[in-house]
Length: 302
Length: 264
Image (cartoon, rainbow over all chains, first blue to last red; front, top):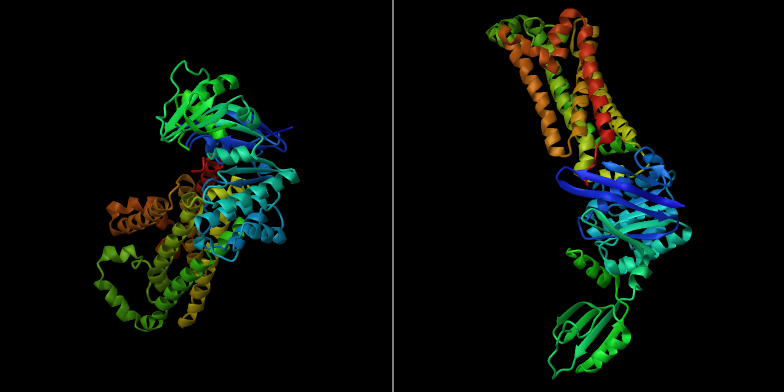
């Protein structure tokens, strides 16, 4: 069953760009990524799901209910982490979490302490004294605490150090095992690639595509890294020499190719080059999308 | 949830305002006994006041030699003004602050309707005003101990009731501004502007017959001490207008807040 369904969802803000006709759906139990450059419309889409802003046209349903008409019922089962976390400065971290949990019923103190321990957060500190990263941790805990059926996380790892990013994703995996559906936005493709089954790609307020991560990465593209020997002159691939080169980038002695041609032709070509090293790998999402964006005459700014 | 949280986070402010206003009332009324003892002299001194100025403060109708007369001139206006400033500050911040400080993103993602959030917040404002006015009422009645005559308790009761109604009306208008606007600073400034402009119109309206009409557009005129003393209570029409202002403001605030796009 679709947990989230967007149907030609549109938000216009006068002159400022919102989103235009976004349609996709998320199935129960998925980890679904939402990626695109800053300002592409990720937060706008997410904030409509929470009914923080109203759609101009189109509709969105969560748990099969309309997000405008049944917003409170929907929010009962959602854990939401905004991209920028702002809380009441006069509260301690524990106060904020209890206040938050109180809206869903009785606060689960044991779970609160457990989550704080996992993320290495001191609950007795005042919000005003917390660093940006620690506030983010408070935000993650308040989203998870009431065991929501759907987690909506807007840039969950922004401001966290790598160790804590890892801890955060560990927690998300456990939530998924518990049966939660996770929808998170990011402009860091690597984390989306590691975490998600499917991704939606948005740019300039429009949905570019929705695809499975394996489909995107395993789409026949190869990432080829050629390192020229020290005494040779590195040279880019000339037109016609090797069909199938989608993109190339020469920096110093290293030539990187995004390649979609045949393996035999590639080997024939590189055999003639004065190389010191060669690496052929599956391209990362980053490389594939870099390609998508550039062919769509856009710039990847994330 | 929200109601309790608002009561708690505003408790310190309420305590300070109650103490200050209570002390102010006590201080002013403590002067009354010596004043009453020399009523005659006081009446003479009043004649030194220019007549329009005396009228502004209701001295032409109120007798400074009685407790309620003295209260009406000295305390009532301070009480209504200072209380209104408190009401404006409190109510203007209620909804706008959540957006200004970006905590609305947290609060409104919880399972609570916008209507319920707004109602709980306004209820917290009313509760604070009730407590403040209860304090003022206690002090005002306790100070009757200073008087050696029989105090007109009903007039005094009307004064404190009028002050509360005015505070509530000011809070309602400020709450509407709080729902309409997003920046705490501009909301608070505008709400205070309404209070002081209203007060100024009341004063100017009292200075001369030519400006008397100004009193009709001032919130403070609904609770004019001289009028209350003369009529033996609040005029029904004045109460109705204040109630209407309050109800319309709150309805407008909730209606708009329900559909408002929360700033991200």
